[in-house]
Length: 192
Image 1 (cartoon, rainbow, N blue to C red):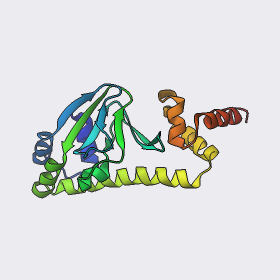
Image 2: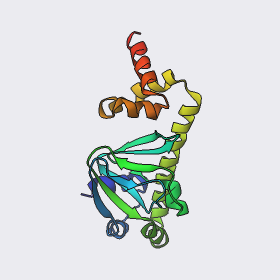
Image 3: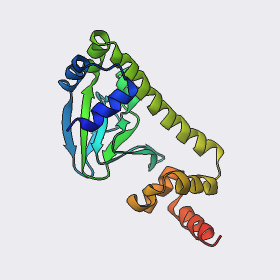
């Protein structure tokens, strides 16, 4: 059950001891989300960081009455509405399961205790925070600087698995365009 997450932690903190591992694994909570279930909804305080043991998760917000998808998370990655998690304020983003998913949760309070009792987890926490920051920052940069055609081409080049796994209207939302615009882009690029 914890093989993937232990490898993940050991890669981030090669000095992780058996005592460190015992301390954190005792605090893990395993949950199963059915397709459509929520990890956190906008307006709730996010109390956990979640490691996707298996499944498929998305993070999005409602903007002008429409979903604006910020990212998709799959196996062996962390997800959280991290600003809410850190500030203890209501979440802006919603996180839900696009497929039946198994998550390993770590509660905010447990993380704070682990930071004090096992300093190696400060390194792990920093590395996870850096990953989440880079993911969000990269998405924002792409949305602000690339044309819709460039964003779609980047998706094909770097995240092509999404094209088979995600409905087209979600792909359009992720790219920041309408489904109709995506349809036109697909036709145009198929003709090249």
